[in-house]
Length: 440
Image 1 (tube, rainbow, N blue to C red):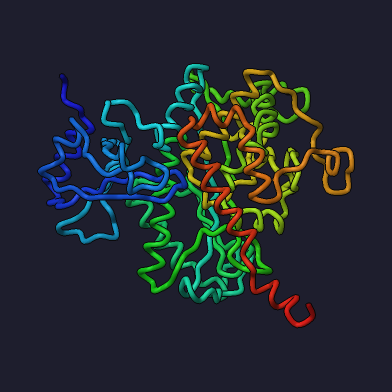
Image 2 (cartoon, rainbow, N blue to C red; image 1 turned 90 degrees about the vertical axis):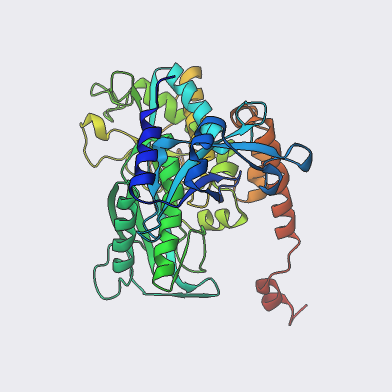
């Protein structure tokens, strides 16, 4: 067998830079980053045969009776960790997880995304995404005092996050991740760093690296960063608006059509894709908005709680950005409901599957959303789930989501999310005590 140039590159860097540990990264079903480390002497066997680990120790993976699974490192994802020492350094690679029978493990979120990407490739498309992740800086997990009272795009003494954003961007660049731009968001000490679009698998890996890098840099400054969708009362929540497009095998933007009779430069493929995202949104929201707290962010956001789309209106669930009208590469759609606490592998897989289903079935766009005062496209549109409980019900009845995620992940999500919802519903909150104890 011919040598793998990517593997050769890893061996050369490990030897030439004196790397002493290589971390293997993967996520559980909910998107929590997991890791274990090997030494350079194990690297050759890891590429050839994988490294075994206990799948029963990972939530949503296996039971104790079938716990032996394997992690195979992807050499194309090799990077040195910039927050570790430059001498005796540490590298990392994302892994594909396999069962011990040599088949892809059905609970591996990275495998699920790759499977949907192959479906898109069979239809002649590459799926590109560019997420906008928002987050907050706090003094600590126990002290949610904001660092500033800044707002959108502030560049004054009120923006205490400038240095942290700068250091985070330097860290991301060292990890090979290209940043498009960054700024202070609307909430106090709320931030946004936008990643340059790329193919969905690379971007899902990048989102995992991004979230860890943000937290590592904050920790180095003695602070805490949170991607919780709604961490503060009376302040905006944090979203992950996902810009997305399909490109053909010839490198053409399949969403672009300058002769669009609607004047949006959208192709029929784009319109069917958008229709799919809208039609199946209630079914995939458990994946893109997976926590009780996710729906508190949506309840207080500018995004319409209904299945809506618009050309530029940011109140719509889905909009068509028009920063560079008429430019093919810039033609894309933006889904505004997801939040940064999701598992990016499953979220991208669910979104893509919904869009592809819209293309396959030739779904038609509903009327464009004209704003909150337009009853024909506002209050008349079907409503999105407003609680985790409603999202679970919509998800559980979805044949598409079961097909996309597979029975293993689908059933796990239904079970663990019902447990979360039931626990939340039975919890007596300080708000209830404060509101009712003195009078009831």
